[in-house]
Length: 588
Image 1: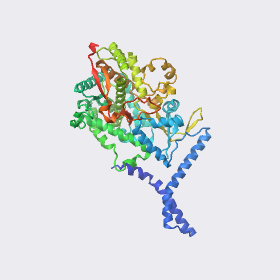
Image 2: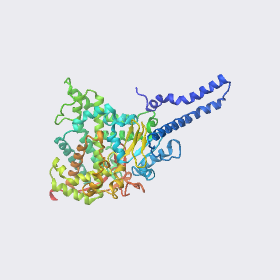
Image 3: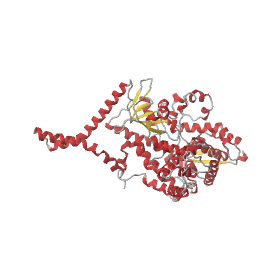
Image 4: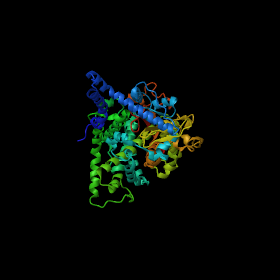
C-alpha cells in the first residue's frame, strides 16, 4: 500500500531534518562529558530549535557562494534575483498565488520584466526558478542544447499521478522509447480523420443550433471541448466517450440552470470533468515547488479523478490486449495499418498495460486540450472581430461552398491558416513550460553572460514571448491575422522563427501538429459554412467577467472581455458564452 504523499515526502528527508538538532545534542554531550561544561535544558532545547534555520542559512549561503564562484570562473554572472521581503520569498509565493487569481496570466512575470529584463530568478522556498522569455535562450533549452535540459524529477513527481511515465513526463531513454512508439502513428495523414471530424462537428453544431433556438447562449468552450474529446478518444481508442451525447449546460444566470441538475452527473460528462479536475490539481502542485506533497499530506488529490478516467480506459485496454491473443509481437518498425487506432498500434509494440495506459493518456491530454483551447479562443476572436469573421467566411464559401473540406482545401486557404496562427500567437495552448538543467551552462548575453547551475529549474513562457513588442512590432498586443501574410512576416518572424513556438520546438516538438491544424481548420470551416455572426455574452456567467484591472498588463491592450487562465493548458474561466446566427450556405 502506497504511503500518503506527505509521509512519502518526509520520510526520505528525515535524516536531513534530524541532523541539525542531533549535531547540537552531540556537541552538548561532548561538552559535558569531556570538558565538564554543562548546558541548561532550556538552552539545549532552544539551540535544537534554532539549529534548523541556522543549518538552512548555511546551506543557502554555501550554494550561493559556490554558484557565484562557478559563474565568475566562466566570466559570467548569476541571473538577477527578484527582491523579496521575507526569508524563502514566502511573500512572493503568496502574492504570486493571488496574482494568478486576480490578473491576466503572465501579469506578475511581465511586471518583473520591467525591472529585471526578460530573464531573471524567482527564488521560492530557497529554490531557484530562472524565468526567461528570450527566444535565444528558449531555443537553447528546446533545440541547440537539448541534451542539457530535461523535465526533471520534480516535474515527474508532480505529474506522475496523471501522466505516469508517458512521453510528456519522461526523460532520456524512456522518453526516446515512448517517442519512438508514437512517432510512426503521426507520420502520415489519414482521410479517416476527416470522417471522424465530420461526424463530431456535425453533432456539435446541431447541439448548438438546437440550444440557441431556445433563446439562450451556449458555452462554446464546453462545446468544442466535447468535440475534441470525442474526436481524440475515437482517434486513440477506436471508441469515443460520447461526451456530445450529454445535454449542453445552460448559462448560470438562466432560469433553466437551476432545474438542470443532472448535466454534470451525466455518464458522458464524468470522464471530461474528471480529466479537468486531474489537470487542475496536478498543475496547482507547481506553486509549492518540490514540497507540494505537504499540501496533500494524507491523500493524493489526483487519484480520485484518475480512477474515474480509468473506468473508461481500462476496459478498452483489456479488450485490445485480449484481441492480440497469442499473436507474435510486431516489430517497432512495422508500418502502421490504415484505420488502426493508436491503442491498437501500441498493443502491437508492447504487452505492458501501464505503458500503454500512460501513453494514451499523455496523447489524449495533448490532442484534446490544446485543440480545444485553440478553437475556444478562435470563437472568441471571431466574436470580437466581425470583419475578420466575414472575410474568413467568404474564403470558406468561395473555396469549399457547402461541401466537406478536403486536405487540399485546407492547404489552399491562406487566410484561415493566418487566422489560426494569430490565435496561437496570442493564446498559445501551453503558455508556460519548464525544464531542469542537467549540467552547468552559460547563456550568452550582451549585458554579461548568465550562468545557470546544474539542477536549476528553468521556466519559459511563449505567451509572453509571443506578445513582446520588440519581437513582433508595436502592434504585438493587437489581434491581426494579416501579420502572417504581409511585410511583417518577413520583418519579424522569417529572420527569427523561434519567436513563434505554439507547438514547442526541437526533438520534443509536437508530433500532432498537423493533426491539430487539420482538426481546428475542419471545425472552423464547418462553423463558418453555417454561422454568419457570433456575439459574446460573458454576462450570463459571472465567473467569465473580468474584475476591474484584471487585464492590465504590458502584455495586453486591456480589452479582453473574458478571464483566461492556465492549468496545464490555457482555458476560459466560467466558459465562453456566445450566441450565433445560423445561415444556409447555399443562400450566401
